[in-house]
Image: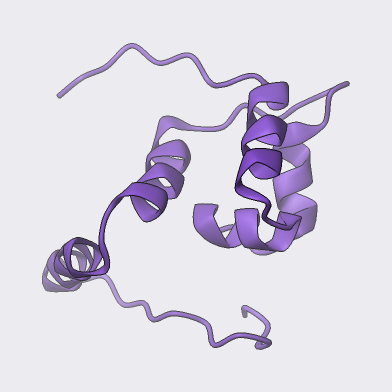
Length: 94
């Protein structure tokens, strides 16, 4: 399904973080970013990085979908040839 997409403003992303009461690290985890320093690039009011539709979809899917649905999607990704696993809490991403 092709879409027209305009990325959310940095303030909206910062507001979402505040609304959820999450840390920058937790928001980065929702977007599958390497760390909170990368999340801050999307919420920098002076020079924000545009968030891709795919990244925004990943974040919102993790906020809205139940665990079983996410696991079905992850399994479909694996069947397509993707290799991935969650990073245990406290462990650094490679």
